[in-house]
Length: 178
Image (cartoon, helix red, strand yellow):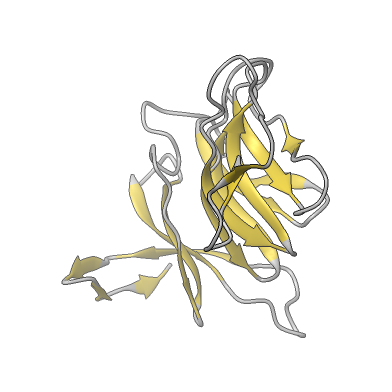
């Protein structure tokens, strides 16, 4: 992991994997920390955090043992960090991290098919209407899903599935909530 201040040459912050490259990717700031995916050579690619002062630490080993969970699509929404990750059993699913605990939001609790629930490379759209992403519930294939913004009346995020959507020139049209 390296840092660049815009003036001086990039400098090494931490050698996360002394035996090879740690491949830090998916860098995203949340709660004044830098979160990213990296491989320290033992546990595979997992979620890490760096506070700018202390050594970077693994947040959670989502993939069992040396299996990589490949956290990706890191996005802040409702004061939480959302991302896709593979636990080695259920495929790539939606995860949420509140700064203390990482938990899965399972949109297909009956299991895993050939396609992972969020596809191989999750992407999110953070809008005033909610956090949008594609996923499969195991029944209707990949569809548009959203998590509504938290409000005083509904502080817990509400997961919703949308149907009949199509995109043209980057705009989502013709959609209705199921």
